[in-house]
Length: 126
Image (cartoon, rainbow, N blue to C red; front, side, top):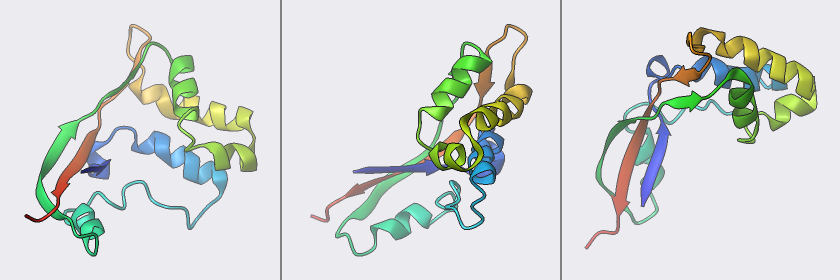
């Protein structure tokens, strides 16, 4: 089995965009998407499962979109923003996402955010 999580917040340009979901949902106790980023966090998930770590590492995972409108649609389709849309309204969430994406807008009109994910390979003991 492979487990994956966001890498360190400082290595994920999508962090500011993800923060829109929490802020717009007004959830101070909402789950932090980076809570499994620290070393050992994914390994801790295995305790009590009968699986053991068999490898892992980090991998680059850029989020790239042809334009800001596609980026907003793509991000909204993940389900991460559902609570934000319910609390703050779809139009306001989309507007906040557009603003959060501005630093990642390239001269050719595309949007690109560089991210790092952590992964852990788990297996049954032999």
